[in-house]
Image (tube, rainbow, N blue to C red; front, side, top):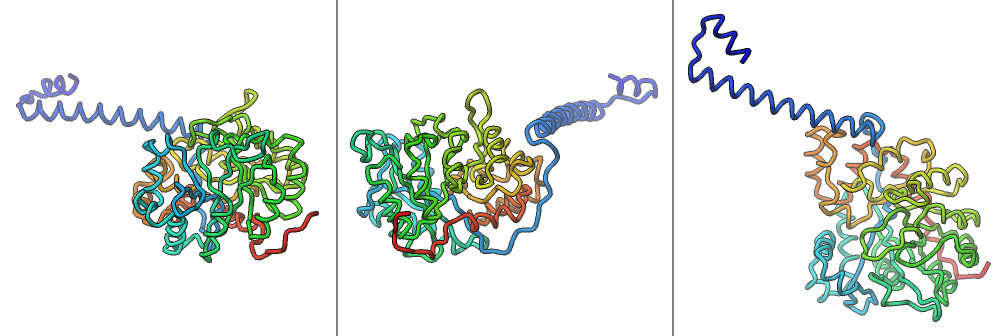
Length: 397
């Protein structure tokens, strides 16, 4: 209307072309205002969630790097001993995971579950940044009476023996043992894993039904310390499985192994979840101040559901010198992770360049580097692992 009044005062004829141009300009102005509002909201959200402007990229350390958080799985093909509950195999997620591994169900059935581990080794070798990866096994829930695996209560099972055997075939793979300490022969299994070259012990307490604060686990912790095996324990919510007791993944429950001198790595920086009315990340940060043997990996923090957690982990003083690198493969090779989720932290050119990287490990490292992950985080993973070359005979402390 103001433009029309101006034209009338200047005796300018309002032609069809002029009217069309005026409408177009008004529509464009409205679009620009909406976009400005959206950008403003996003900027405010970033200030609230991410506590400041984007972190500047830092130089990547010289390769090769170690990824200490890589998963495998299996359906029991090739006498692996693995299994996935039938209802999980029927879930849409199962096909996504297979695609992320770069295999089909038919290939696995024909060649055996070891195919997934071989594909991991091959894709690692094709990349430039990550030289080796820790393949994690996954023990299940244990029957409290018999001390044996409770198959009915276990949704995914990846035996330590299977992964130890398969990773020994490849020079770029290490293995992390998963031993439920409630097993009748838990200490013997731990000794055997150490003798076979395990570099860590992996737990998901919320699905393995382990309370890390249980005093009955002291002998297990003492044996872990004797072998120099760190504990990589899931912290925060667990949503990859249908049944999980998230209270068991409360970072505060890790106080006991820390007191026993075990090096503990809190997986995922306790992202998501809360206990006792307090975010799990806050509970982990408090523990950091009292235990120099406590670390945390940044695996999964570039997932779309965890975008609010990487920035605090990188900037809060409690986590300084305590972070290490893990990818959480295969999840980082799915639609859950994309550089396009970071339009306020990366330029369009950066997002295009990162999205074009074909190798999943190179893409994962490059994305984290672009988001400000410092080189020492990538380098620290190797320093925390038990030396796999130390294949001493199992002995009691």
